[in-house]
Length: 104
Image (cartoon, rainbow, N blue to C red; front, side):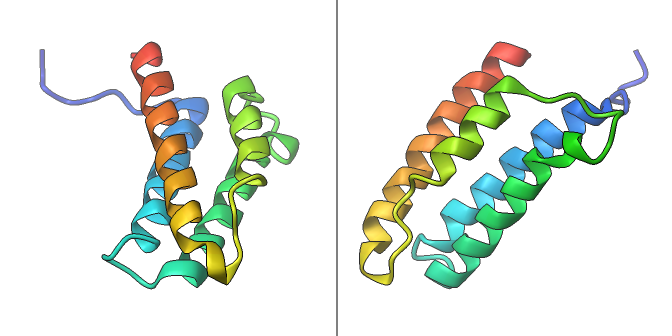
């Protein structure tokens, strides 16, 4: 074994990138960052990444990610709902981690 990890497939890349962006969104609404604006931007980027299969034939639709996109639209986004937004993103991160562990 050389210790090198294999280059991820396009689908693995999109899945991993989605997790990274979701984590960034949660961090932005935690005490570590600028809350609302950053989170909203990350959430928009995540939705666009999930939509990538519509634009790139080499990337297959991921049923889990399509469901995640629907759940993102239900996360509270108003300025007065920051704690609810943070909690909603944390819940999605836990669900995402469970899905990721099923894919290993």
